[in-house]
Image 1 (spheres, rainbow, N blue to C red):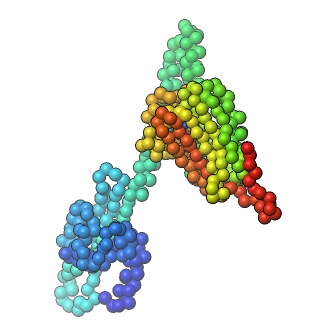
Image 2 (cartoon, helix red, strand yellow):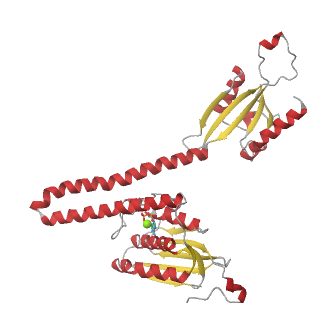
Image 3 (tube, rainbow, N blue to C red):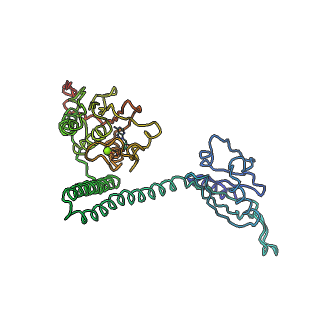
Length: 379
Ligand SMILES: Nc1ncnc2c1ncn2[C@@H]1O[C@H](COP(=O)(O)OP(=O)(O)O)[C@@H](O)[C@H]1O
Ligand SMILES: [Mg+2]
């Protein structure tokens, strides 16, 4: 190949954001781009190495062998087990006979000496696809269950309405609960999709950390009292101004406290707290309960859309109204906190309780330069 062309071809391959290998007819690597080294790290790829030492999948190697044998392009999709890991592989014979003299033999195409193997990692795309499929399946399920209840309750109500007014009243109550759940589900779905599509307009303003905590405390106190759960605050550096959309953050805190109330048996206690982090740039908020707790393997999943722990699904720990939640609250909370530039996490011990915490960025006041402190203690 003329030297200029070789340089151009090489830089082209280096610009491809996918692993590319060139192999000879013995399936030995004669060229690989930087991306392949990055992708297959820690394997130290070298020219002269059999491709089989890098790609361990016999199915992919078979595809390359087929392409060599038939001297024609080959394509395939390969999955690794039942996981989302999947690769799209394309093998192309390289037409490479610059030195060949035009002759009568040119009529007969000669077999290529080199083959380009391009590997496309489909894992991410597969994962997104699966999440979307699960999401639709979940929505359908979450809608169908209460709708079925409403249908059955209405039928029974029709029978009882004349003969047994007390029972009829009971059914009306149950229908109301289901309808309330459905409205909540639809509202939360809309909110989540609005947040995810970036349609929610955030009204960001500096707010005192203490004010957020006190407001949520006041709003949740009646529910806590009704369920005989103690509720208190633990405010440090409450005067810190955080940069936040007050409505959204209040809703996140309310959801955390509501969860804490739901999953804490009577006699337990809940603390809503806030505290300036050591870095002085972030304020932490937390809701600590002495409730049922969450198992370690479930803890990593509770921020997923629709995820409810087995106990929550079994409704074993539900107390009071709004008990049968949608499983969307924490997913919304995570989106909200992350869109504020914060972080949200949970810690828990089964039987001892859970702590949900998040951070928000601290507002920088212009008066700071005048020597006024931004952080008065709110104790
Ligand atoms: N404080 C808590 N204690 C125990 N489990 C909790 C707590 N908060 C959340 N969870 C678990 O996380 C799940 C998801 O919470 P969330 O997204 O708010 O959904 P929902 O409250 O609608 O069930 C709950 O169903 C429950 O299993
Ligand atoms: Mg909730």
